[in-house]
Amino acid sequence: MECLLEEALEDAKSLFLLAEMVEGIEQAKADEAAGIRRRPKVTMHVKSAAKLLPAAPKLDPAAPKPAERTGRRRSEPALALPGTPEADGVWKRGQVFSFHPRTWEGSLRASDGIEYPLAAGALMRSGLVTLVPGMLCEFKVVAGEAEQIKAAWH
Image (cartoon, rainbow, N blue to C red; front, side, top):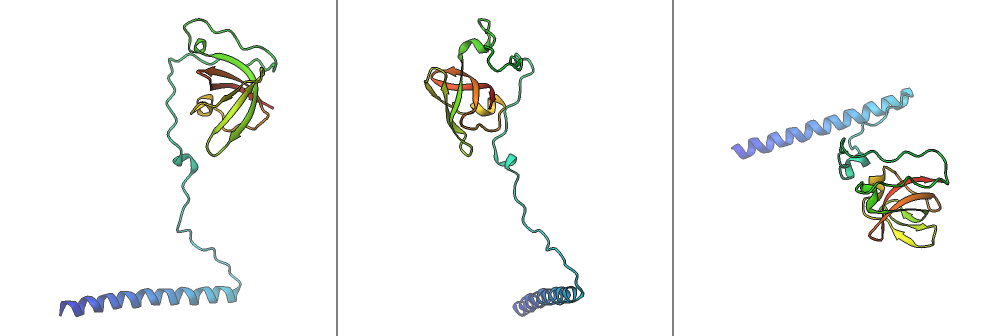
């Protein structure tokens, strides 16, 4: 007996859904005849690209501030004092040799012709969004990789 009641309840639900669908189609036909255009409801949303990326590291307020650019393109970078984080690497000038925006992998060619690969996370640490091959830049070389990009311009 209970099985029959459950089947009857499922049949009633199916008939109710069918009636709603028929009513929606009839309403759409009436709207079309009257010249009314209705937009469909959005049932699926795309996630923001920012939610797909890993969380950016928190900035340390006690960390030393990066050297500011003066606006002159050919000026040499300021000398770092011994013991500061900038003294651990060598600052070089060059240009972006290659860059893949999806993987954030690429290489920089120094003015002396040596090519350095971008270290993992170098772009994120530098605060840049993307690089374009041919851009001029100043970068820090640590252990044979471009660890940080100080400035990039066309």
